[in-house]
Image (cartoon, rainbow, N blue to C red; front, top):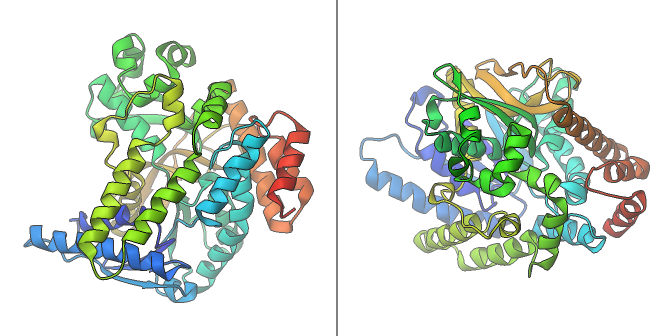
Length: 453
């Protein structure tokens, strides 16, 4: 089977490749060919060097294992898409230079500048949506039977826009969004309870980067209430330290880490403003060094540079939020990287081999979350098999949670409208309605500074 990765020169592609190497299941449903597409040949060459080293390591250690997937790369989109069984979209329109503008423009107005949350997320979406829609139109034309796995941010917004194209063309719900935040949250919480993360069931509801873990069920019993009574365990993992034991008890749920920007917005904005560089500026310089060091012809050197850069990236993840809450360091088990790659592999296995499983994914709501319409893309546990991903019923959602979800869904849909028809009014609506933008005039100035509308 063939997997095409759009954004194939991206820094995290080796994690996807590593997951494919570790797939020892039924060969009949295994990815045997990996096609990398990117607009930059130098980026593709650097990543191919890392993959070549990983494949060589795999051959050296797995004497009787399955062969590594064949890898090829191209800058031609149509060539990359033809014959694909799965298309993994992980593009970054505008590169890290665009991300730094998305962060700096809102910060100049005193509001959060972040890649996917707040005004920065809206700006990123407005720039990304037209490209994502054009890409999914080409997929519908050239690989209509392919499954599209979207990791392009803002993931919920982009997945909904791409899903519309497939449904309008009668191709069904074959666009599925993935994210590593929920799986990391669930596994950390289970470990804090003292449970095996692989033996627990998780009740999680929300939108991408806006969700809550409401229950952790082990052997038929919800173990989350006992966690709330133990302050030591409750603050032993990342989300407990971010939000604090008292606030988690008040909520009666464990929020996705990105909700720190909502619940502690003033502190988060101040921390980002005081930092020497935004996250985008840090990554821009860091990854520039990696691509510069990773010249063709020396896969081991490219891999070493990549691994060193990846480790530093993971150690500094959400550093400003951690600084606000005491400057603590991440646990070693959270520095492995990825998460989304394992979700993507589990999703592909379930579809190609009919290995029924439950995964937290971004899919059209249908009737899973009361209060949201059927086509609204939500992030909830889904039953996945050869027929695709079917969202499981979430039941009643707390008013504060549903209220935030409805507000953000209105923002996402205004951005989708603006990207589709170039409407400045819709773009302004998307910015001004965001809960983290405190003035219509601020939204108007941000839009002017970003340009394009």
